[in-house]
Length: 330
Image 1 (spheres, rainbow, N blue to C red):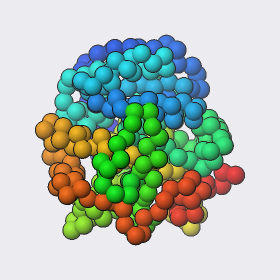
Image 2: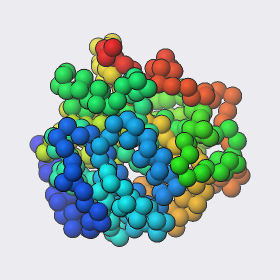
Image 3: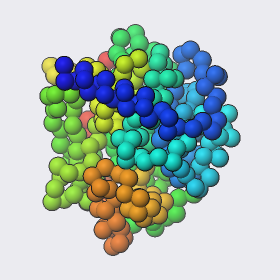
Image 4: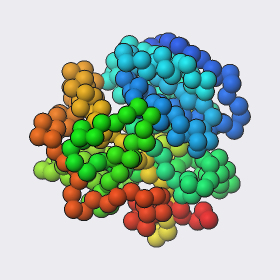
């Protein structure tokens, strides 16, 4: 009963917050049955957007739905020019929209029903088994054949060797030409019995920014890929959903369910300006605790790389390390 009330509340919040969104370029009439859709909230990510779009277009994504939170760097105008993008803008508070969840829940309800949907940040790059040879439609067809409605992906922080701003990131560049290292271990997993999801923390951010309080480190468990139905809602970013059965994306009996990773390209030179901006805005979770931690270490040009860092090769490497699994998808 409690979770049912929580789901209704999330739906009501999304319905109410829809008034905060103003269409800039609405091309949703071009969405076709069977299209895989990407949903994003962004602010001032112009330098990242060309590669982000190219990456997901090559994967087979058909349409992108963006909420632009009052950008002033040309992001909104750039996205509005893209033929496969629909764009809404808002000047309202990111924090009071549950960090964008209300806005995205509304767009998912209005445009995502009946589609496989990927809900992402502009610095997240989805990797799944066989992604080097099979388009995302092959994955979603397989998931449909087994009536699997949600697909998990662990967030994997990627970083350069040396200070974050030592090598400038160029617009349109593959971010993993620079941020090509990750932590292969150092992860903690627990189960949220109420919501039935796994809670994962650790990796480079816990090691570097929260060494004395690892339980305050950002959560790395995400469920970005969902076959959306009316009544579904995200409740905490893409960490968990309601109905809670969507969160049970793991096997408790010794097997492995198929899973992926989100390569997280946050730690590039644009982060320096982003940290200053977000500390000024104070719109992020826990009074921008994470950004305060970044600021404290970036003053010393901290290097995230360590002797245990692993250089990224491909998805098979991540499977060998136990960070994702192809399950029984052959």
